[in-house]
Amino acid sequence: MDDKLHVISPFDNGLESGSNHNDKRLLNLKQFQRQEKLLKKAKWLKKSVSIREQDDSILTNRLAEDGFENLNQMVNAYLSGEFPKHQGVGNPQVRKLIDRLRARDIVDPITKDISVDFYHRLTVDRFYEWLTPRYKKQRSATTLKNYYVRWMDIFWKDPELIKGLSEDVRAYICDAMRRFAECWNQTYSDPEVKVLVNEWIERYEFNRGIAYKKRTRAVDKKFIEYKLRLLFDTYKGNMGILVRFAAFSGLRGTEIDYVREHDICSNLGACTCNKIHVENKDNGLSIIHINRDFGNKHCWFTIVPTKLWEQFRVLPKEMTDYSTRKILHQSFMNLTNNQVSFMTLRKYHYNVNRQSEMREPGAEVLAGRANSTSAIHYSMHMIDMMTKATIDGWKSFGIDILEEANQ
Image (cartoon, rainbow, N blue to C red; front, side, top):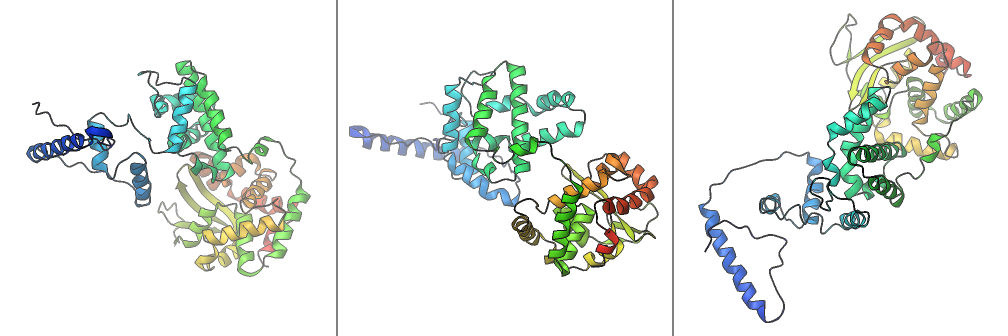
């Protein structure tokens, strides 16, 4: 009898109906006992894996979907060649994917097999190399590549998770996957993947509510003034401080949390520490030097009324956290008939700056979309112009930024 170690697969039911039922059970029992003896004689190696704590439940569910109780079972099946052959047998989304791949004759370009992991054959490096020359700014290519890496598996195998994401995130995911399909077609001459990507997007409604983003819009100063005046007149006290700070700073939600909680450094002499640095100007404005990177998002500095900054810094923590911002977002939508969200304040801020003396380059710096060289140049040599442009820009929209800080 061959002494080669054989691991009994977790996919085998191991039982047959009819007269062979008992014989099959006995054979499985003997194989299991023989395996136990061989495993005791084997030399073992310990291999470890590290994952984030919040991903533990995801890993457990994925193992269960593939028929495993733990990682050891999965590794044994992988070593015996039975995984990923049966990958996703318990996942209805994966079965749908397999059916569509078979219907469109989409195969792994190397093995020519139907594989739910076919898209991994196109490496991320190859995709990024293909993307880069197609965009004027490398940041745009990098953003799409990052969205592809983060969401490609979920797009194909667990698409229901994407349906609940924001319109902006879904738009990026759709764009990244469409670009992947173009790259795949040019690399492997297989246009069916483009058809399948679009089919997947339509089937799971990933593009629901985002078509309007492709339209041009007129920026009416009176419209923005009216909406901001409505918000400023509605929200008073601590809520009013948060609303005004969000509008006049243009910061993202997580950045609002960051600047309220982070320590302030009093050293303004080219200090490079990780604390916030605040520079107060004689015209009643303050420059808040933040210098924060979060993923592919940047925040260099912002300009706000000094008095508003002082009021904002003493707000209770719960007044600026995500739950409060979510409540404000829904309140804005109800008040403005779904025309203004909390994030819209950041867009208004960009519009004001872009039409002021600082123009698009300065607006891009304050929005965190310019590179570090531009940010340093503006913070060192153009800051006085930017503070003046901030006051004048808001006045051109009918808003006295210094007077609003006193409300």
